[in-house]
Image (spheres, each protein chain N blue to C red):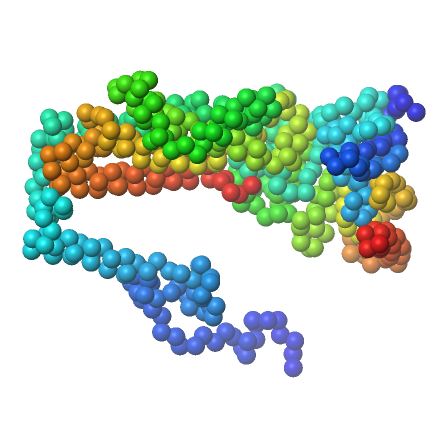
Length: 303
Length: 271
């Protein structure tokens, strides 16, 4: 026999058994696994072998919508507890055309989002330098550690009474609450970003002739960016939850205040619409932040 | 000896003692002295815990020795500086910068003229065989290519001494051999003084004009060799050198030396 390099001889040609390939639709629906998973014999316990199960998601959504329709159209559930599709549709048209309490629907959404962005902005502007100081200096760490560690586990909502006592219920009070909610998240994120630097990178920079300031600007800062970004994302989520709650307590405008006031008038349809809007915006913020993150810090997790 | 008027690098009676929080102490280095002429390549070998990384960190200026001192061209080392470049095992590249920006890091930090730096970077990219990869983010490169970037980044600063801490330690065997050739080539072309720390006996023999074998507890110099292989490596094929009787003899001699040290440590730990 001649010495044939692997793959060159006719007898070594790969034989692919006639296999029925599932259609792309079946895979998209999660009814069939992709070709890698299909050939795995160990699937239970392998997280990558769990597919989207998208068909079942559709079933869940459709069942919930059906349940809504059946219970409301037959009058099984009173409109005051849960509105019918029709009531929601009518209310939405009305909100869209006339707004809620003489304020356009869009303005309610806009003011809530604006409060969140302002709070996170100031939280980041103050929190990031503080976190850096705590990660880089024993004095700063010692000074601020008791405050940060004490405030960390306190839910921002618990601060509402104090803030109302100190600052009243105007815009400053709400921004202050959101600022505090974002501040400690940002301090902790920046601090852990600084502490997470690999010492070999810092050593490398000094050996390449960098000064302390250059190490801070060119190594510590970029190295901490992924953590800082995670902090901003978390702060956005927490602040969105906090702003709605803060508006429930006291506000004229904002989606939170909208559903609270609507409740007082027993407008359940407006409440439901408000809840759906809150969900959609929270989700959109999260998705935008992920997109931004992929664009701004592509090196995340690749150190 | 106080190191004055000395050209090259002098490690003068360096000792290092770490005091443990519990009250004991670790004697990491005991009276280590060595003398490197400008342009020499010395490899340092030893079982784990013999203090070779501590020694390199002292030379780099990251640690101050408990006693003794390090002198380069007559002045004492007191901290890290661009005159002593460092190549780390892996993960010391700046992943937020592309290959070119990594290599130009040193010159940029020291405010060197941009045009000169750019030319130097292009030249180095070609020398280390990454001519087409200048714009790539470093995290897209293989381990071997990343270490080429690390070598180029170090050379871009034109240091007097290059300190290498297991630079090829994380590479697979084939890539490692190729990179050893590159290190030899760079050494020959640039005439730099190099101190190379390694776990691999073969690598230490192949690259080191001089070889120091260290012993642990306390870390100290055990034996020193002068070797012909690095010189041969400039003309002969690395495979021929590594298969030569002379090379194999030396390798076995040093391997059994280190083996004995490891056995002794294990024995002491068992007792």
